[in-house]
Length: 86
Image (cartoon, rainbow, N blue to C red; front, side):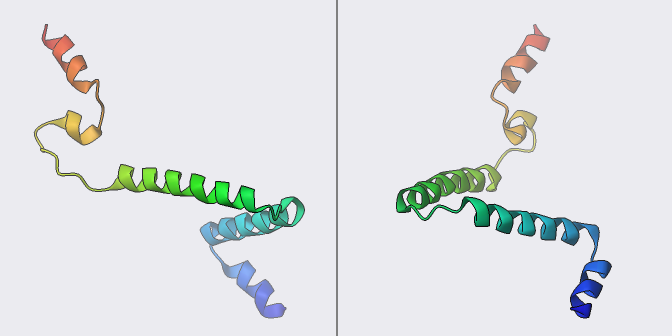
């Protein structure tokens, strides 16, 4: 037990925050856990959709370095730049 207290005393702030999230997660699971299969299948489906979206949003794309609109991903950037040229 003394080693555990010493570990928590010496860890950095970022790891302490992660430990707080982990403890919060365990408490929430303890009080609100529902073993219903329908909820778990729904959760896996939602996680797959969100995970796929995140992977697609951070995947590397081949873009031209000359066009900042393509790098930023803003659709309306071209229309805004054209408005300033008029």
